[in-house]
Image 1 (tube, rainbow, N blue to C red):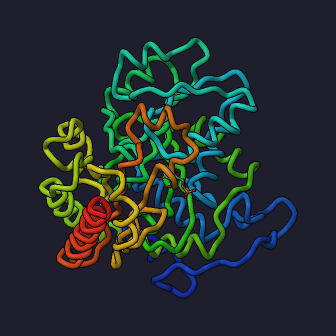
Image 2: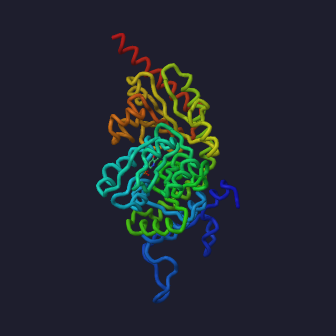
Image 3: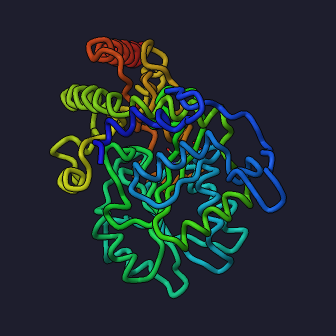
Length: 390
Ligand SMILES: Cc1ncc(COP(=O)(O)O)c(C=O)c1O
């Protein structure tokens, strides 16, 4: 099999048989002519199957070592489609630290349909055992988690889930199949907010699901078509275009993020830095074992919460914005943005407090990024000192 860099670069490039177009075309069609009664070209109606989307779906299934891929209109649409696999009375065990939107979907919507969730550190087998109930049907893992970058040993925990007969679902948004392939480590379903690294350019909203096994793949095809939160042909094409350069981008994201995390570790205004590429991170060894590199996003805490507002005001190259995984660097304040829907006491318990910033490091030149951050920190400090003198 070709190496992953080659498979990424070549997505769709040999699949257009009529003209040989290297870039697979956008089939902007919702209906497909039947040759005659009882016959189909393989495409009938675009919600069920659509040519451009199919190239993307086959590519992600192959990249994640799964059996089937499904492209959705957002990461949340992908999660909703997966959660619809469960029924009233089912219980899920879910990573304690996780994307706020996933928490909101479970607590504010799925709970109304009788699907309940318990949040635990998914790397703790005793905690998993304690959370397990006779009606537990699924395990939902983020690794690394967003935003605290907690790491779960996927092989260990997916083996546990298999023994219990429950479905393991891994959100692989932060690492992508270029760096980590959960199905190879025992997971049943992988989900992506493809809006992030897979798309890579802060310009397409998309979600992807990959399933392993015949029963799950058939069920997911049924749910994907029945719910209908599918990705359109233009966005499918745009996502594939982004994915072609994933390998190069992830390398640069990691290099830049590592250099900035080290810079912040030494900075007098900064307290904790949460990045699994650092040897001091508690998940460092597991991360090294199960993935071939690190993501480009990390979180850190300023020593004094009063620094947050001026830092966000003074960054110039780095944008104060709510996303991650694109070529442009973005800084997010999780407590009031991405994780605002998680109740305060839970956020404080896990550490998503008012001193925490999340930094999605882009692919700009490292010197420019450090200069921008350093400048913002100095100005923020000067303002704080000015305040305390006046
Ligand atoms: C880890 C993770 N999963 C899922 C989502 C939801 O994806 P989307 O914003 O594409 O709906 C996000 C969004 O930030 C995320 O960070």
